[in-house]
Image 1 (cartoon, helix red, strand yellow):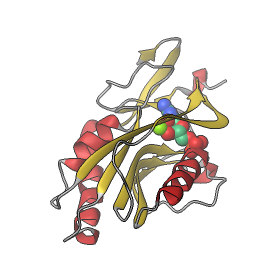
Image 2 (image 1 turned 120 degrees about the horizontal axis):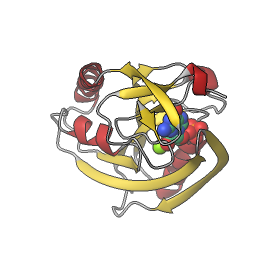
Image 3 (image 1 turned 135 degrees about the vertical axis):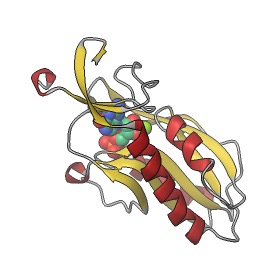
Image 4 (image 1 turned 120 degrees about the vertical axis):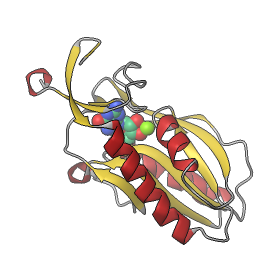
Length: 179
Ligand code: 5GP
Ligand code: MG
């Protein structure tokens, strides 16, 4: 699969992703029974994951959106910018941060820090993917659908320079293109 100048290989099928998303939703259904959290989708990458996840939970829920940016091309640039803030007041609310992928953890560390200042009652992290070997921050990932290798991936919302988000499956950078 060609995305811009790079070659990618099929890594996780859409069917497998949906099964893992359902399993994650089951965990949330147990933990949020009787509650009404705000599920905060971190744009852009988490929009497809969030859309599938919110339709699998069976508790009342509000949806919110925030936008952070840190990646250019294949690498995180280290600095994390908040590009758009949440519209809802989170004071006293239970928050589930819905993120596509945790790599170094810098983005999530910044997001959690922002929520601390806003006075939320609780803040939990639900991510689709995690690259556990690359985590260099001290953040707690409460729910994670899948652990993956330390390679660059695209599809199911995740992009390579703005492209590939609409792919149904998840693709991994071909070894030949990994330079
Ligand atoms: P971190 O701040 O944890 O290093 O990086 C998190 C952000 O970088 C994620 O929200 C995601 O947008 C982006 N990211 C990390 N790894 C990948 C990857 O393999 N592929 C893509 N497309 N984005 C990634
Ligand atoms: Mg992201």
